[in-house]
Image (cartoon, rainbow, N blue to C red; front, side):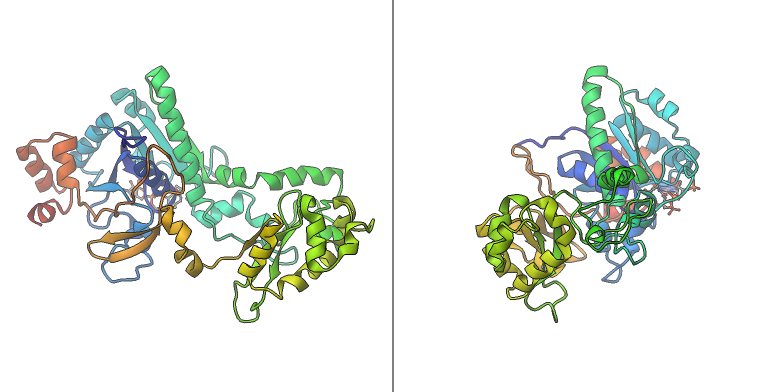
Length: 425
Ligand code: COA
């Protein structure tokens, strides 16, 4: 079976998380992703949060599967020459350097477009054009500037960042969609184009319901927020709403049996209107089915704290999986709070390839997240991340068609790293 992006060559000039997330996805779909790294050190994440000495970190491996690595000093004359040869050879250049860094290497859009009119240039930056466009940005800055932090956490606490990497991985996902869209457009125009994703914009795109609520505030209180039932007036911006459901069906995280000693003995419970009657029966409040204070979604809004306290009295009698089984019988939407330990052992996730075990020459076997997007005619296999410069020689010879003498010259110029070592291995 062929891969969906087979034949597409990606010049992967990305580092850390946002850009590598994007190029890893493209690699999973079959693109030939050539990761360009600085000789000696490579992507900084190789050495960050290391759990084993002198072994590529799990931070690096989880973002760089299915890629090839070439080391190249893009600031030396020979390195520049090789880089331009890659620009002419590849379909897409993906980068997430700090603003201005690519241009300082001489790679402006105008020059790239002139050298290879079919090339797509895809970039991640922290901010789009405007007052912060020159800023360097990491995940949590994007979560703060994109509206997520101000709307996450509890009303009476400080703004909170979330564990989901919506700034980095979220932007990488947006960029990948931009790239395949530009590749599709190129089949019509024959030309490449620029694809820009700002991390602030991507976070905002994922927080759009909170911008919706900002505008609803102009027309009255947000009645599905717990704060409404508690009689606490709203200010002039979307408040933090704890674990209140972000949609029109009220929901909360509730304690389950064992919560006193297990930090994840909780269940998310949604009081979907369609299943209100079985909810009332299960929790032992059949009268609430007809009581005018509880019978309709609107009537229930001022009583949400009382309702969820009553439901919690029921969930606390069951462990989260038992509660799931009982509630699912009645199609009541709910979900267990799963720890990473539980997820790592989840058989269904392993069966579908969402969690996979990978063999690595210096690390041994490790666990990682596989492709969450399943294509029926183009399945993904996760192959290990490359060692630093592992494919330098191979790329120079087989992709860029350098002769033996030219490869020697490049190696001796110092523009690439590890080439002799790799060749000798
Ligand atoms: N050969 C020679 N030089 C190289 C090189 C190579 N192969 N690869 C990178 N460099 C150089 C760059 O040219 C740059 O040099 P310059 O500043 O002299 O022009 C330098 O390395 C550092 O690049 P930079 O991107 O500034 O790295 P940083 O570690 O200082 O900053 C970020 C990291 C993530 C903050 C920054 O890259 C950034 O803001 N990126 C955009 C937003 C983003 O993606 N953030 C999320 C990261 S998960």
